Every structure is written in C-alpha cells, then in structure tokens.
Image 1 (cartoon, rainbow, N blue to C red):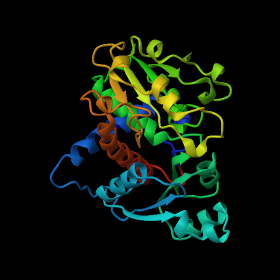
Image 2 (image 1 turned 30 degrees about the vertical axis):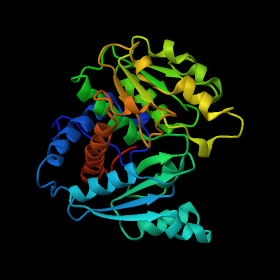
Image 3 (image 1 turned 90 degrees about the horizontal axis):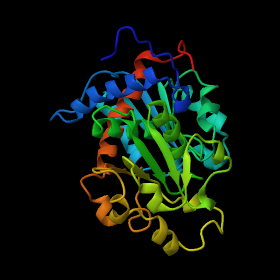
Length: 318
C-alpha cells in the first residue's frame, strides 16, 4: 500500500501547508486502494481494528462528519460522535478541558470541526493522540482539498501539469479555497480566483493567483471551475446588496462553461445552493464531479485515518 522508501512523519493533519508533494501523492495513492474497497460488495478492511476515532464536531456537517464516520467504520475502527449540543461546552467547559477529557478515554485519533480558526492546532499541541482538522473557521479544510485533488487527478488521468482551475464565489470566508489554492499549486495546477470584490479576503493581492471579477472572462480557457458555497452565516451585513444580483453575475451556467476548454470539469464542496452558486443544468451535467467528490472523500479520509492510526502517534513529527 505504501512505498517502502516513504516515511509518514506527521502526528496530526492540521493543514495542507504541512504536507510535501510526496505526502500528497502517498495519501492519494493509498486512497485509490481504499476507493477500490469501497466499490466491493463487502466494504470492510481490518486495518484499524481496535483503534478508536472520536468525531468532535462543533459546527454543522453532513458530508465531512458522515464521511469520516464511514471511513473509520470501513477500516474497522470504533467511531464515536460528539457535537457541541450534546457536550459540556454548552455548560461552559473550555475547548482545552473538553480535549483533555476526551484524551483521558485513550482515543487514537480525534477529528475536530470548530468555528474558531486554529482550534485543531490548539488541541494538537496539548494532546498526544492524533488530531485531524475537519475545518476550522475560515482557516483550513485539508481533507476537502485532498479529496478535490483526488477527484481532479482521476478526471485528468493523473496529469496536473499545465492545468488551470478557477475558484469561484465566496473566497473571503472559505477555508476550502485557502486549502485548495496551496495544495493544487503544490501539484502544479495554475489556480485563479473569481469573486465580487467584497467577497475577496484581505491581502488576496499577495496570493499567488490571478484575480478576476467578471465570470465570463474568468471561465475562458480553464480546465475546471470550483464553485464555493455562499457562506451567509459568516458574512457581515452589506457585503452583498442582493442575492438575485449575485446569482445573475456569479451563478455558474453552461453559457460560462462554453468559454472554458472542452470537457471542463465542475466541482463544489457542498452543500450546493442551486440557482445561486451553480445552475441546475451544470450541477447535473456529467462533467460535474460533485458526487465523485463525495465518494473520494470517504477514500481520502480512510487514507488519512490509516496513516495517523498506523504510522502517526506520539513519535511522529508535525
């Protein structure tokens, strides 16, 4: 499953910035082997039997939480889910004390999603078990970027060189955008951005990306477009004058894709707001990879749990 000359050295997975290109290829290659298991009638491997994975989700999630749960169970790990609504955080307990309480039960891995940027690193620095960042505030979402990379590698037959991807939408509030910009550039993809000026993050001019505000121009000659969810729950009032105006200017439709290269792929991390971020016809098009992203998410998260469960731990480095 792994190259005998390769050594995974990470105790935690907190951000794609900690990964080398070799790390990424290792994760994607292992995910491919697990993807094959997921297509079998019996979708089970004994790899993590006896290991315990805690899913600590302080924010709502369907795809990521379920995906990690399925990933752990298919590797025969014991998985336990904890949400803020059912935890002592609602009684005033700090994140530190919640983490230490969970560690006292001797889990092997804690998967955390939290509304505060840096929450996963905060725990990782205080716990001896492995920690996986399942999304922290606006900061990072490493496994989402990895599964996007997996889906694109599959669609592009393993060749990232010379490819161009445009990220479209609410970039200011998107941990998905931040993680994908770094990871896809690491793999050799030319990443470009498109958003209204009010939905571009501070300092974006220093990002290694071309920025465009017009969607027609943004779609010209690209190999793929990644739409982002409009994160109204994170936005301040006044960033968008009107949702219908946003949809008119930034909802991805086939008229835009006709300006892209033939066979251009479309991605979306979900949940999709059809008619606002992406047109129905595009979301249902065979070149849309949304459901393939979901399937890839299980395989990639199996790979991450495998690497941390079998090769991570207290002796690994961050």
